[in-house]
Length: 272
Ligand SMILES: [Zn+2]
Image 1 (tube, rainbow, N blue to C red):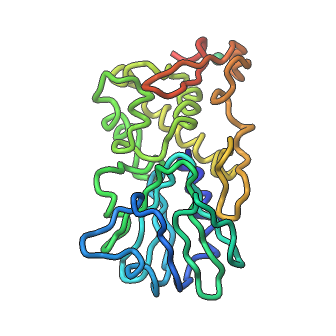
Image 2 (image 1 turned 180 degrees about the horizontal axis):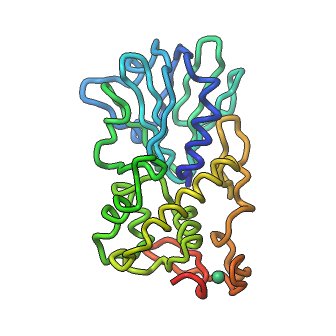
């Protein structure tokens, strides 16, 4: 699933092609992924608008249009958005949104496993997310104390707290496992028992996210950037997808268990 680094990579790779472009035609072929404001029509809302900026909060791509309007786009399990300098590009039954840009080609949103979401924002594209998306994990105003205050008020496993997008946003299964490994924290440890370790965990979260952005995201199967290229971060993962291999820190074998329905990868020896 596209997590913070993949959405950030999409944002960066799409920006030069989309910024300033005027949307000449729009096709929204799956209404069930749209969250539309009352009295609005997605085509009327979009066509004729200029793209004035691309932003990101957590795992949402924020497409800003003129007059403070826009769309907040979530990629679900396998979504991506690709710019094609020349139409038509890849338009198949999994392509749910197509925008034709005046003189600037076409952009297609494709999600083979259909859990993506397009949220219409008639006034303020980051505000439209409200409290469903908490502070971004890379927000410079987030510090260890605040991180601990947000996540630590619970006896749930720390990994479940990291995945809760309403608390701190951007981490999914891959980077939660990686961050816990770097911090030496056992994924099932109760969040309320991490006193004194929040600063270190936040540093690990930022470290794995920043490195993954530098490698343009992680591709296992479907993820592609805005030009259709795979990310290069997979070979830099330490525990995720490495079950049975040696821990890069202590050489014990990486294990996998299931926590809250999600496969969880960790070193049984040096994470506690
Ligand atoms: Zn280890």
